[in-house]
Length: 395
Image 1 (tube, one colour):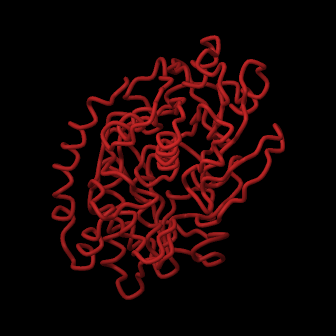
Image 2 (image 1 turned 60 degrees about the vertical axis):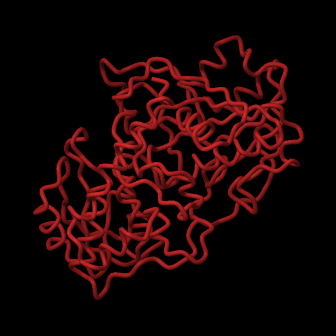
């Protein structure tokens, strides 16, 4: 049942289809999508395009986790295949190539992107978009973005910028951990600020306000990736994603990934008391034990905390994530371990550094530096990015 006074938003996909489909006509269309690429009736974009005689859908492209979202883990390369519903070829962009090739695009005039982002820098979908834009610039194809809301609002930004030399498949450009942009706005930023230079068209949202979280709107939420079940997950993700770079469980293999955090050697009460003593705004850490069914510590009871966000407006996910990593390191240094490579096609670099976008965060934690000192550079990074993004805002 929908909440009363819910804010109504028209999606980019719906804008394109309602405008007599002009934007899609007389073109051979390629489509980058997954299971979350739906309209308000939960109809999938590939099915909608395939069923319209005036739209010539020729090719499908899948991001990480596949076009139907059924590939669970990182670093599993998805095979190219045929779509069981439309019979069209599917090319994986999380395979031996992350950028569409000339062969993949030979039957495409316009490449349409419709994926649900989650508002954080460390999420491969936005870099699948960037790679596809580069291919379109290279092979003279149009790129069309069907915009979707940033599920954790379009106002708040937080964290350090990616440092030069730390580019990866989860961080290609100097944006903060929480970027506060929609995919359409990111496409504009990537295209103009960072020199991709493709022919870009954005089907903008109608009715979306930058202050909205997705669950304050009538926008459909379908799990965009296997470990992103709810909007609550997206709210904490820009911080607790740091734990992917450690041997601590980030809750994969539970029903609430990125909200459960822990390891077998952690005393849950001790950790919760220590974290709550920091008095971080908008969050309470509840001591808990959980049993991951797969991934880190599968089948072992982990002591840890559940991250309860009590006030979204004051909650700082990136600060919270950094504070949690530091506290666990300080309390359990003898047992604490950083994750070893590979991580997201990075075979040599420390995975935590890949996620952080620098080496300084890890080095500061290891050296015992205070939290305030660690986050001190973030203010200038956030200010410079906020200034930069202003000319790319659509809403």
